[in-house]
Amino acid sequence: MEKIRIKYFSDKIEKLTYIGGKSDWIDLRASADVTLKAGEFKLIPLGIAMELPKGYEAHVIPRSSTYKNFGILQANSMGLIDESYCGDNDQWYFPALAMRDTEIHVNDRICQFRIMEHQPELVFEETEVLTGKDRGGFGTTGRQ
Image (cartoon, rainbow, N blue to C red; front, side, top):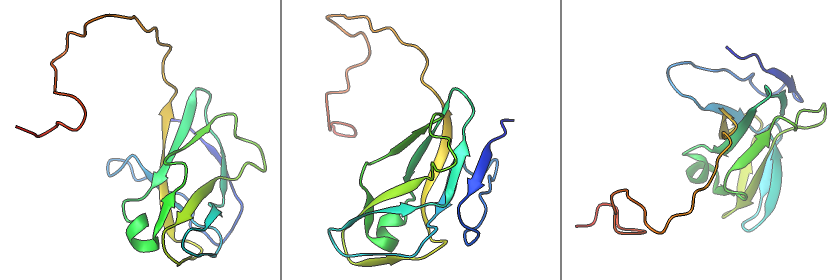
């Protein structure tokens, strides 16, 4: 089991909890009240910083209900936090693009993260032909 040092920037948000066996993803919460107008971009503070173990990174994505509940999209599609982002002031943020006027309140669950090992070292070998089963190209899954 890996231990991760975490710093909280706010005592108003719930502490992180890992529910083993139920989900590999851990919810993150807004640590400030944020109002956005449609088309506006803001960085929403998540109220935490971490010292990830060497060789690991955190992947941050919206929760499945984030758009429905708040009308925001994650502006960078997926956040990637590597183990070098570990200083005392390296707070995590959610880069939000509002598609409608919205209000986000302290403790609202707006995104989630999981910790992954770095990709192993790879070597690419060029070939003229791939031997895997051909699925028919982009957008063809499920078509007859």
